[in-house]
Length: 363
Image (cartoon, rainbow, N blue to C red):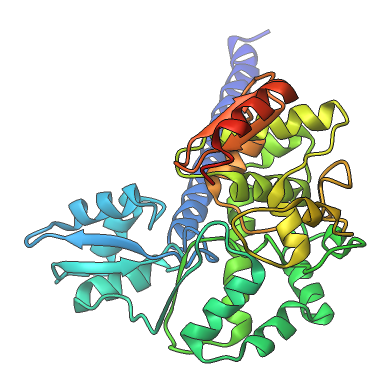
């Protein structure tokens, strides 16, 4: 056999290997290019289309595009400072104006750049702040006072079954059939997140205001998905427990210890016996709950009924939500808020009554 007969298969093998290597490199380049394209396209979109919370940004005189990009990324107003810089260079954007801005995470990158070039802050037609612990009726009053909508009109929409079902389709992981459980007073109680909302119009559509609040609740709870799964809690259960903690907490209170008392009672089959649920059942706000109040016939009365009430009794903030997911490890079964805002935790009824006797005359 000639020497060339050995070289032919060898040459074919080499060519085959080269072709394979080239194909692999080409595929890698295509994948890298596609990944880069998808990454850049995603980075140009809003960080959170549902988050209308204003974020203050201060741009000093002489700030470079790179410095602006870093600040925007740190405040989570854009997804990538690098993409911001590339976009600005590609579009030949310049002339960023120094000033104070109120931006939101619902803005795409192009809109943020537009505002920073004009030197104009976000036009705020309506700024609405919902405080932690606010109940649905109070929020309706707040919206009415700020917008001119009638309170009755607002409450009608908040209780409209067809409208609520539309919200359920928009947020299926958040709004479930639990909100229509027997005994529920208001289906959306606890689902209008306490935060500051800004709208371009002075009187935006009522549905837009409500949907922004529900969307914020969905966005906040989405960050706790893993913790909720670990604790085997539904959004409705979490918001219900969080609302109890929110209503019992004072500025000086340890929410995690309050949460521990509620969980300890649930595990022992004890009624929660929390006064805010009685006041919610009564539909009243007063300084002290009287013995006769404890007899109110309502599924929200946690003196008469064991377990959690049918649903939230207020809108809880992040601190109460986190306390509901991570309660302290204690043996406490009772707590007492003093007139000075301190909360005293005890393990037995005798200890609780003894502490209560110290302060009952001062209340």
